[in-house]
Length: 81
Image (cartoon, rainbow, N blue to C red; front, side, top):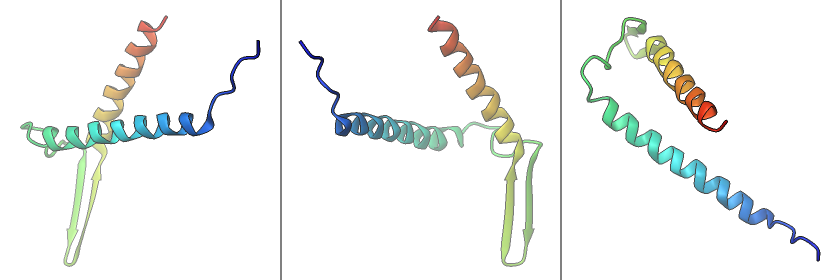
């Protein structure tokens, strides 16, 4: 008996659902993490304001986010073994 071929539309639908769920989680995290005291301005977050424009470089926030995501991915990879 031959194995059924996977439906490519179903695979794309699953990926879209996954990315949609991740976008919802990221949006909720942004809403709730802004309310934590101390996270609104970290030491390496650079703000440059001039008349008519502003530049915001969240280097401290990016470093912390990178460490957190790396830790989560490391933990997931350890649990999958």
